[in-house]
Length: 66
Image (cartoon, rainbow, N blue to C red; front, side):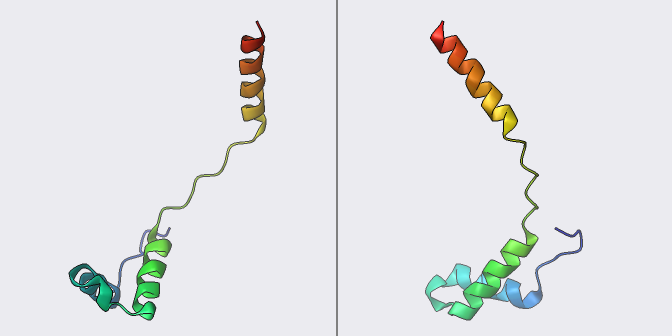
């Protein structure tokens, strides 16, 4: 997410309309709200390697075997 991403006045107006009367939103307005929310969401952190999970599972299995 870039630091300068902000909700436009048009999208803010649609969001306010949706809070007052959710049934009044059109499909196009819902898509605009969803697109705005998704582009402003924080980036996902990188996943950790799967090798660590395997090592943890093996250690747990060894403890159970004893």
